[in-house]
Image (cartoon, rainbow, N blue to C red; front, top):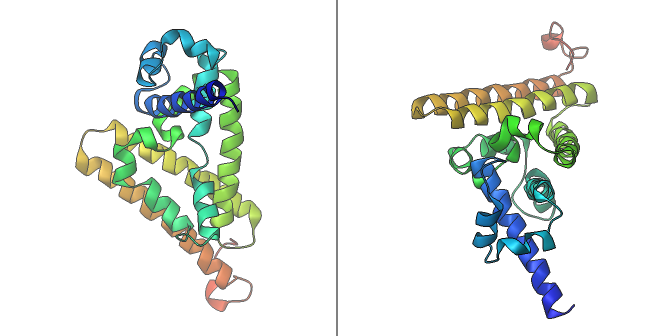
Length: 213
């Protein structure tokens, strides 16, 4: 690979990385091309050497922010820190995540803006949401896949909604209450499934009156 091609590849990656952070901090309409290229150490005229359009940049920038949970799972499988449903909730609903949207989840950072994004971006978001729901379902105990998927959708929606609300309010006590309350509720859902998995209602007299997991 020649120097110029290698440099172009590195510049492309740098622009996408900067755009990904800025978009999550300022919104899809809050980042100008000229400012972005300046931050990357390039002129605005070089933008179209890397991207077909602004929508192309947005799609790549948003896509680069995906996959955090999958990377954590892969790291755990390779001997890294364990990754569980409880850890996913704790990390997501943390104060650090709330105060640093530029390095966090693009869903809660951009919320309704993604619904008004370009066709390509929405397609990427749709596919990633499918993957994330499946990943969460796989972290839940029990063999009932339908119930796990339902709880995964509930979890996913609650996490994003809670974080979006926590960032919207300026009262520290209130945003902490939002994060703590949703976290406690989601952990109780997982605990309920675990109890029913260990003591199936049809085998355990204590659980006979409990609903199926």
